[in-house]
Length: 218
Image (cartoon, rainbow, N blue to C red; front, side, top):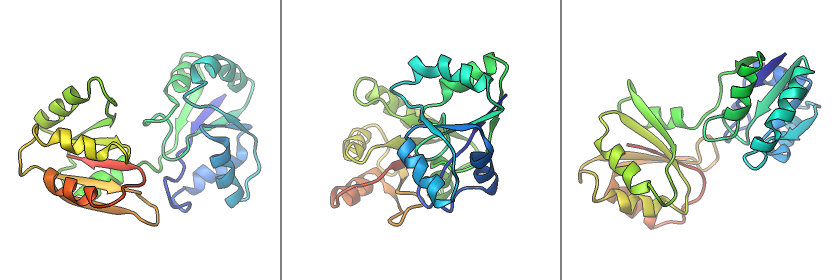
């Protein structure tokens, strides 16, 4: 009994390892956050395998059933839409229960947005804190205040339609000369990273339509 955690490309389909492709081909079946997205990847690499939906809307209800199915299989793979399952994507509950049930969990190294954004920021990377997605409303102010006071480099994800509001909330909490880095559409055609003060970032992104997934490094 094995559960493979398989990172998938966050943009460019070439950002997948040979090992990941082999695992996706050899496992009994694949649990995926979005079967349509996974099927596109499988089709691109001419892999034929069965996919079943495992996403945030059904993971609490379905985790026990899938654990039973994994027990009856030799090996199963878990994928998310993009990146590594469990990093701001479904996966934690299944992994936790698999460990409890004595199922061998093997996480493959691979694509994730936070590490490229951190390295590309030019900010200290010897120690860092990953915040995931900030609270949408309640608790967001407190979270940003903690980030402002943190001695380490902090990374968090943000959606394009909330980025400007988040930057506006950051202005009074951070020093005027605090440098941040904002990466957008990592590994995709329109990938970009903008570095500057919070005010400069607010002006830059406020003058354009913001699209794609955002990673902020402070």
